[in-house]
Image (cartoon, rainbow, N blue to C red; front, top):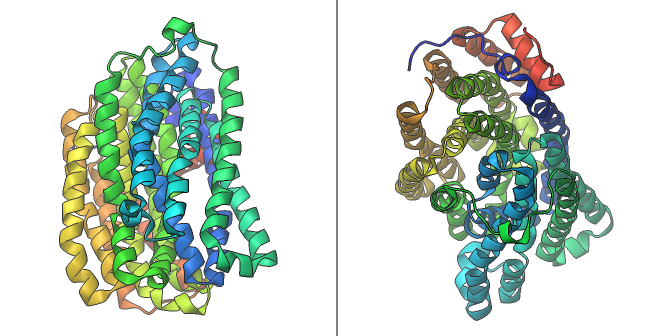
Length: 504
């Protein structure tokens, strides 16, 4: 990759008519993500203090949500985000309805399997709640499908702030429900954890879908009956490629959960969930910001403006990479305090969490690259990379698990990200319609990860003060190596925090 100009700011890259939607969406995303992280962490803490089993149930809920998104939601969020910007207002509502109908057709075979042979779904549910529970959860899958589709439609129309409010409302609602159960119904949660935790989540999804539909109706108009199921040009090649990539992506991102569940049992799996959901909180914040990148890129490409698309991509990279490092290396540097909140039974996981932080940063960078390939209409290329990631994980997991247990599982998960990232970068460099200009940034990023992994394994787990000092030193070294200036950092922070325009 060629040397980069290092002063790319998103507010300078965007044309005037896109600024309000994109920068306002970024502002809402950042503030709501920041507000949501303590609530998301608190959900896990409340369940962990009830015991590893309720936390394991919550971990399986996340696996189920990802399964629905990958196998039953045809094409996933990226379909609506990619095609809606190019459609006239009269065709938008009909397109969303057609996407939901097609997803229901993809869901029906799974419902038939769950009704005929629910035992075949043991690999997904691990025997949780019995055979009737598996059938009920597959039958209710249209609820999270509809929720995800309508939020994706709002993002595709640059109604990013509204979509983030609705998304975060589910987190706030889950915290309220878990707090109430923790304070008033502990014995009931221990007796029926799956029904209560999963039931609360699906009820909140349904309420969120209703709110999203009401907002979508304001920004679209009813389509003529003859046009309701008319799909835009290129829909099927893009959607089927993305569907294949999503299905492989499920195994690429959730195979670790399934293998540890079946290898370790429910109690030990709960401790693995405690680890991975810490990393997932950082990943969730990054993915929310990547929705803004997806929407910005697709609007730039709809204008056939490669220069604008390149400027948007580079400005997002310069803005997001320091955030990725701060969130994930923060987990590693503050491993002991973060685990102490869970309770004494989780203190032994500190070593695994210190490895997980740098590896999770690598995974977040892969989300950035994968989202870019999808926005460019190239999900089939990421699909090939996901096959390599799955194969690498299977090769690494079994020997590392037998030698190091949960630490080995973390190392296998992160080690598989390396070939995956190499392939995504190679594809993007060859096929992107704009130069990447990121050599210095990427080398500084890798150096920061290597330095963190080396330094944190040499010293024992530290408290808050030493952890924050270590994190600050690592971030400062990265910013200097990557060529950031104080004015550029101020500009990126102003865009993230305030959605402000203008130059730094």
